[in-house]
Length: 276
Image 1 (cartoon, helix red, strand yellow):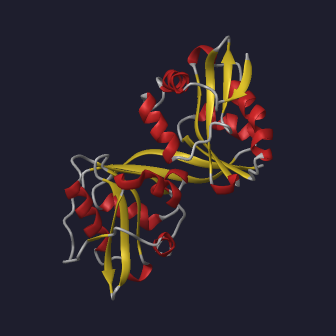
Image 2 (cartoon, rainbow, N blue to C red):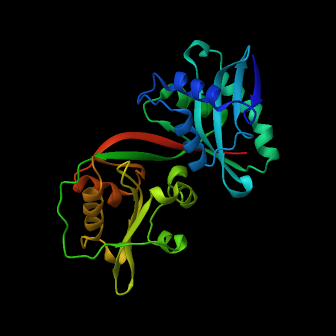
């Protein structure tokens, strides 16, 4: 068994390893080479900062690592170990191997997310030095509530991400950060409604995937039906149940709103960080 970064590893080998590792996951995940490459592009995965455990030419485990501009923050975008190799502490060994490379690249902080029910993985990350920052909820379901009020919903062809950020009470997780929205390109539609000439509420979603990435309502315009109008518009544009993930559990207003419009809690996971 040896360890190496993944920039020279064929995508077919990484895909095969990830599929084998996640086949027994709480929510089984399977990728094609194309869908995994898309995930890497969207999540800013850098294979030169990612690591694999190799046994006689076969990938036994991987950590796909994302990095933001300047590599100050890195994010574990997928840690998987093939079942036949579990019990050998490969996750810990891969982290130990890649840490010097991450620090040399300028990384100061590492983030990851782990399912609330995955006690084994949570314990591994605690032993490695990660601490929990917050609990994140995912919601899914049909929007059952009608729009309240006659609000005009506008599609934004261009927008100022910093302006939209001023409406939020909490910061998005890695996959929903502004850069990841930009990376998704034309698959994301940004809508808003205005009050007194300025954006009072907005949402960003993928109608084909029925997935909402971001939404927020300015504090002074809450409880007036603006958020409901946005989600009613999204529901009408989507062919199936709406999904929204990584909602900060500490935001009582956000979670209460999502439940009030008909969505049900799907899964929960911990966001964890470690200073490098």
